[in-house]
Structure formats: structure tokens, C-alpha cells
Length: 81
Image (cartoon, rainbow, N blue to C red; front, side, top):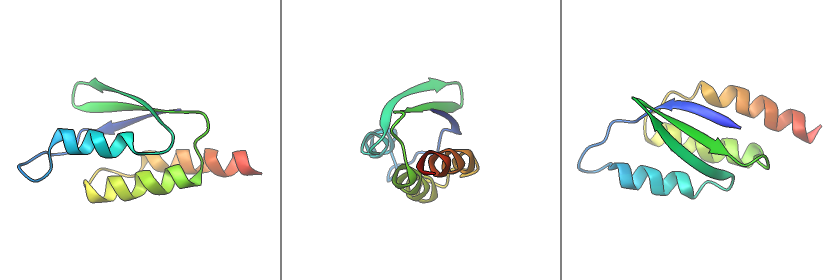
């Protein structure tokens, strides 16, 4: 599963390194690529609602639009049914 998200704003307290380290701690993290002003986040196929919750917390902390997570949540729910 791939998610396209806007690169967050970085400053002296929120660096790119901190953000990427936090992403790599997501259970289903697989890879990330930079595409202009966006990141393309690739998750393992084993993602679930825990992954969605982790990403939601991260997106909220970094003020990233959480709308891409709605599709991810739908897929995670449908995989458990």
C-alpha cells in the first residue's frame, strides 16, 4: 500500500531526520521516496488498524493532512472482516 502525503514543514525543533525516524518506527513501514513536495510512503501488506492509528498520531503531531488515512483505514477494516 502506498500513501502520498505532503512533506511537513521542518524547523529547528522538527527536522526531517526526526520525522523520517518516526516514520520508520511505524510497524508496517516499508519505504519512503521523495516526489517533489510530497513523500510516497510504502507500507507492508500486513498493515492494520494499529498502523492507521500510529500514522494518525504522527500526521497530527506533524500537522499533515490526514485525509489519505481514510482509505487506508477502510482497507484495514475490510481485511479483518
